[in-house]
Image (cartoon, rainbow, N blue to C red; front, side):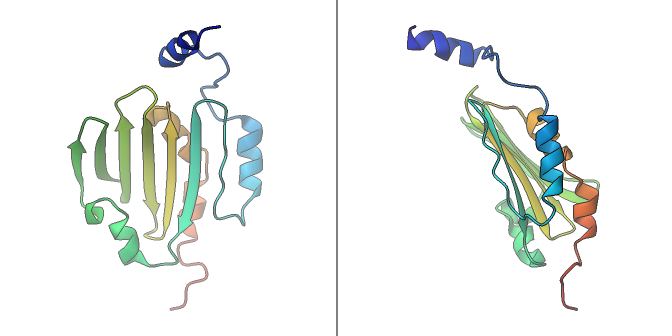
Length: 150
């Protein structure tokens, strides 16, 4: 088989083994890992990396989270389109790759403490949002004061 055959199938999204939604067993078992702060879930071919970072209440650092100091706005270059907005009181950052195999990213800040980040190669923003929404964001956000000294 010629390499061009597989490259063309990849570009046309005709790989045959990707699912539109996260595997139900993965979601079930991930939720059971309630004491885990970070988890890397590798997949075949296209992949989504899901990361949860606890800033420990350093809200100033979360505000700087690499997104122009938490300011809302948009920018575009040859590689991607980026947008930072407030949605439901939460800071949200989206990076949508322009190339089929490019890296896209979806980040959301919860309770000025937790950063939930999904990024992946060859996946669109809707797939990344789906991965993030498979988590119990409300429960995570409700933990914003847990373990914090007043």
